[in-house]
Amino acid sequence: MSPCPDFNIGYNPGMAITVKVTTVGNSAGIVLPKEILERLRISKGDILTVTETPDGVHLSTYDEKITRQMDVAERIMRENRNMLRKLAQ
Image 1 (tube, rainbow, N blue to C red):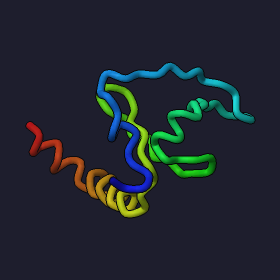
Image 2: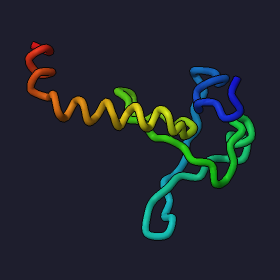
Image 3: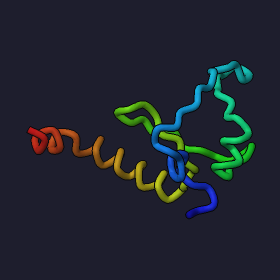
């Protein structure tokens, strides 16, 4: 297991916590309970990636390689959107 796993690795799939959106400066954020931070081996200052999914959002540790791959994929989809649309039909 990696030192900073995705948030759902090692968790009981039925487990859910409730957090409240709060003001953080001029932005909004959530506070993760200390127990969650310890269990996930993340700490204040760690960088996370937020990915939209059909079920909501997925939080995972930041991975520069994945970010570069996603940037390339988005560029290719933008440049080839007409061809991709035709393939999807």
